[in-house]
Length: 104
View 1 (spheres, rainbow, N blue to C red):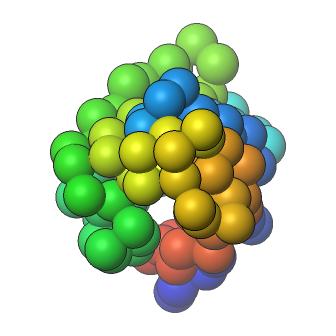
View 2 (view 1 turned 180 degrees about the horizontal axis):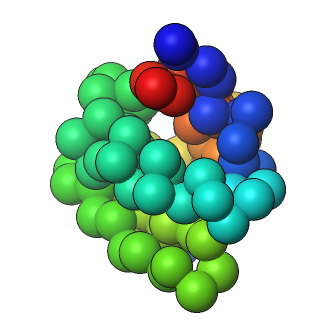
C-alpha cells in the first residue's frame, strides 16, 4: 500500500548556502525502519528532480527516529544569489512529505 510520507513523519528544512538541510522525524519510533528502508538518498534526489543538481547525503539518527538529508546545489547559488521563490529551502521539507512510500 502506498502512503504519503506525511502519514508517518514530519519535517523541518532550511539552508546552508546552496545546500538544503531536511530533518525527517517519525511520529512513532516503530516507523523508523520504514523510513530508513523507503527514504533513500536516490529516492529523495529523484523526488526533487532538476531542483537538486548535486548529491544527496543521508545521515541516520536512530535514537531520535530521524533522518537528516543534505541536498547539495539545490538553491540556485544560495539565499543571497538565488532568484528562486524559496531561496532558503524552507518548503523542501513539506515537499518531501508528499513523496509516496510503500507501507507494506
